[in-house]
Image 1 (cartoon, rainbow, N blue to C red):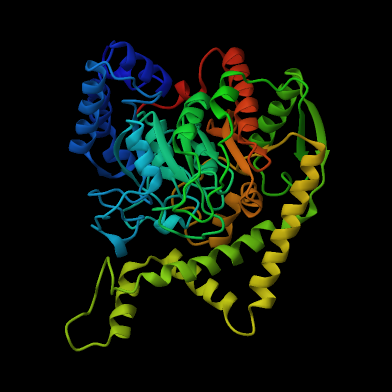
Image 2: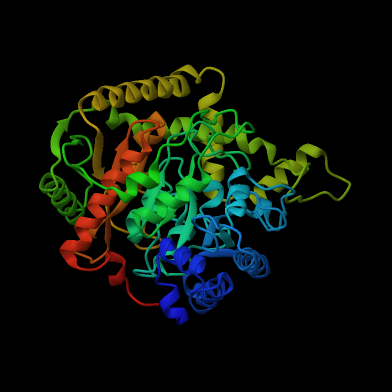
Length: 499
């Protein structure tokens, strides 16, 4: 089997061929490393490729198989890991100069679970600095290109992970989602991304941006692959105080038995209108009709508080980030600037932060610090938390009427790199549909629902489920995915331009 054939396999197919002996884990890893060598100079999906570490993991999988040991469902499958999870001996920069070259002394719980499942970690992927952005243009190490059109953004903040999937540099990836940073990149690259229920995947060892919103999750090219990865990384972790102490939902079983027959599917009035690209709305409407054809009942929903979600998010998230990023003081780890023996600790901290943080990070720290300051706390942060409660309550009422909610994932397809760089508000609108789910802590998925007719770029369908009902995402997602493949005869990603 040639390298070009291997990299087009799904994760499930790769695992099956390794388990049967048709392929070795080393062959699979080498094929993907070769692909990275061939295309990543143009894509810039990876910040660090751990070639030796990946091959060592692959050799260990092959040794287990040769010894007759039972392999897990993703043993030997390569994965691209967002550079926000600590990994022993491998640089973890969070896309920032302030942690350039930092080698963590411990693995994040998610990293450890991947290693225990014998998933081969190829390296760390590019991202908006500290996960603050919607385009992966805010990385201190340069923007990532969208494999569909390298002049356009791959989404953010996890654009490196989504681009690695769309360019066939890896069959699996990990992202994090604070306001849409798994789903939004999936939508604009034609891939699948899932934000699990908040607390469903451990945050221990994930560098914090906004602690009440951040959530790691799986990224893949198919719904089943995402489910297999979700099953590996999910579960209670005593090291994370926000981790849910309950069995993970049966996501793989749901992905293998996709169906929407008899389900009630909600369509929210607030998730369309001004600012939505015509082709995105067209593909979404077609998806709703498809759900009807598959046996779902469509229910119109009115959730007026959702119109306030963007404003509430951009007070809550910066407030939490201003607190979390206070730890980067040049005293404990990371960059240190100006420590020449003549300056005070305060001066060194200020010089280090000036040199180490990018513009978007500084913007959010300033905004968050202002919102938390004396005299403004109740007016801004306190009010935003009240809106968050209203949004959560509206979701609860909606889920009394429906099983899942669907919407466009993003209002537009991928926009050109640089187009919104000087307009933060236009950039923030990219997460218009995804933010309410983070504020409420629900589970959500984005999967491809076609190409926008005006530009030929991918459009994402978002599916939202109640907390701890993540399996519903996969049940609906698998049914929609299968219907699309049957209708057009091939996976959507096959249309992606060649690199």
